[in-house]
Image (cartoon, rainbow, N blue to C red; front, side):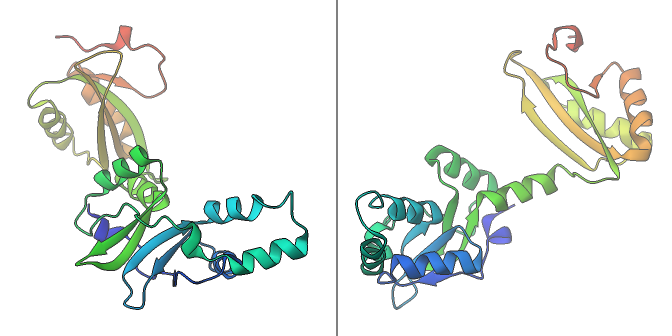
Amino acid sequence: MHVGRVMQTELVTVSADTSLTNAKKIIEEKKIAHLLIVDADEKLLGIVSDRDLKQSWASPATSLSVHELNYLLNQMTVGMIMISTPITVTPSTTIERAARIMQENRISALPVVENDQLAGIITTTDVMEVLLQAIGIDTDSARFTVLVKDRVGVMAEISELLKNEGVSIRSLVTWPERKHPGLYQLVMRVPAKNEDQAIEALQKEGFKVLTEYVDDFASFLPED
């Protein structure tokens, strides 16, 4: 999955001379968390978050009267507080790469730029939605975990086994178990009606299957 497939393209943009007061109104009215600042040619200049605005709103509040504060905020512009060198991605950036960039830089949104033109924006909410779709959460599926050693062909074996049972795999996500190097969790979803059948078939072939949280995998480690 790539950013271009899930990015938001109905963008709310403002110019750098937009006052903080107007910027706050726009964010509240549009119910968004970020404003993209562009020039006359719609090229990206920077980005401002609702958090940036709140911080600017609060900083002088203890020393100024309401009238003075409102005057100041009407004079200040988003160009004064925007992040002028925002980290960007392209539509061809993978979702997982975009997620890593946001995590490493502790940011919640990435403007998407293509051929030097603003094409969209992707947020942590968008990434989370992709994740939820990828792992197949719905009311008609069942979830369980298969513990496997890192070896060639193990997923093919599991897929073939369930295929022979007539059980479709709705989703499959893998990640390494930190406490046990070389051990992987295969988190699977199958149709709810096939849950018992799938688990029984896997266990019959020696696979370790967990259907609930286990604090210590020691007694569930797969055999060599």
